[in-house]
Image 1: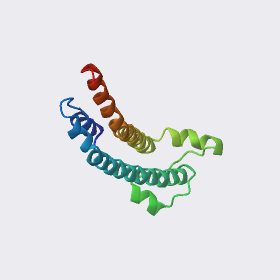
Image 2: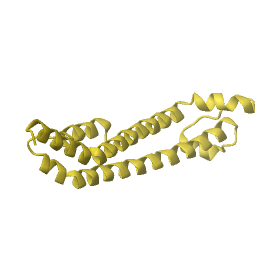
Image 3: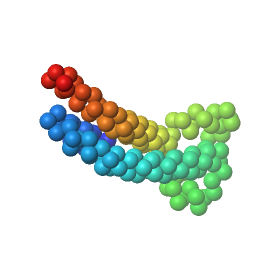
Length: 144
C-alpha cells in the first residue's frame, strides 16, 4: 500500500463529527483493528525488504572482492569487476552501488510508512480521551 493511499484513508477515518461523538467512540475498536492490520502488513514488507537488502549486500561484497564465479555473474547479468580495491575501500563502492541504493531507499520509504502508521495507532488510542474531553467541553458550554 502506498503512503498516499494510507494518508487518504486516515483523512477519511480520523475526522470526528462533534454531533456524533457516540458513533466516533464506538468506532474506535474497528479503526484500531483496521490500522493495526495495515501496520502489521507493512512491517512484514519491511522485513522482506531488509532480507533482500542483506542478501544483495553480501552478493555485491562478493562481486567487488572478486569472489563471484562466472555462473553467478551471468545469473545477475554482470561483467566481472576488473579493479583491485583495498578492503577499506569496499564500503565506498558498496555505498555508491545503484542497486543497493535502490533497495536502501525502498527500505527507508517502508520505515517511514511504519512510523506514520505507528503515530496513527497512537492517535487512535488517544481518541477516546479526545472524545471524552469534547463531551466535557460541551457540558461546560451548556452549563452542566
